[in-house]
Amino acid sequence: MIGGRGVGDGVTIFGSNANQGGGSNENKEGNKFKADFILNLKNQYSYPYIFMIYFDKDIKSYLIRSYSCENNDNRILYIKLTNGYSLTLEQKEIIFVGNIIFQVTPIENNHLEITNLSNHDASIPPKQTFDPSSKKEVTIGRNKNCDFSFPGNKSFSRTQTTFEFDEESQKWVIIDGSRVKSSTNGTWVFCSHSFHVKDKMVVGILNNIIQINEEVPE
Image (cartoon, rainbow, N blue to C red; front, side):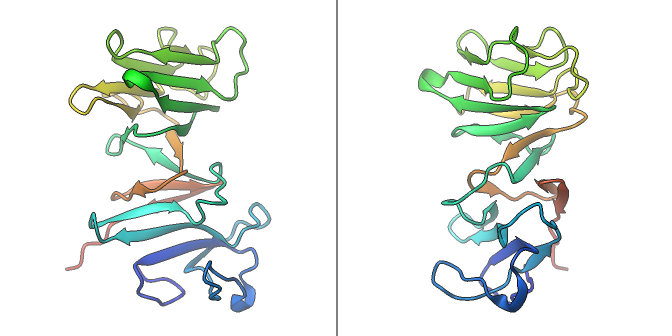
């Protein structure tokens, strides 16, 4: 990947148009540079650097993460799950489905803890824990049979997001929609750590949507 810096260091940095003039920004080592690609976010975002795509030589794969993990706003950069991109739950994740934000956490004994962080309905428990020994599929959606059901919320598909327990890996997997059908609005994961880049991956920055395509050299 080659961007505006013209540096072949295996890292491509995406920034906002905030404070990019004159190359006055500095990295942690005090070196001044501009981002490789500038996104016109106007006054929505005040930091010059948003996220990076970099090549990890150990695993021979491209990864994506927010530019600064130390000062990371997890509500800025998010990744869309699709039929070709499910997510194995290795740690706490914040996901955005419909118009609700959930915290999804694997806990002791492979249990799954799901917390509704924007609970608007007192009739819906804000937190639920699921035991894979008795329940291997958990759903969020408009269908009244979903474990987190939002029947009157049109931002949800009938099945918006599914969590499946994989017996082989002993881990939960997050799937958009169901195995049969994707959701209409998608399942989005906030980028609080590094994620593998896959062909046609869709990422969002505020209200901006970007698709990442792999280009195979001829």
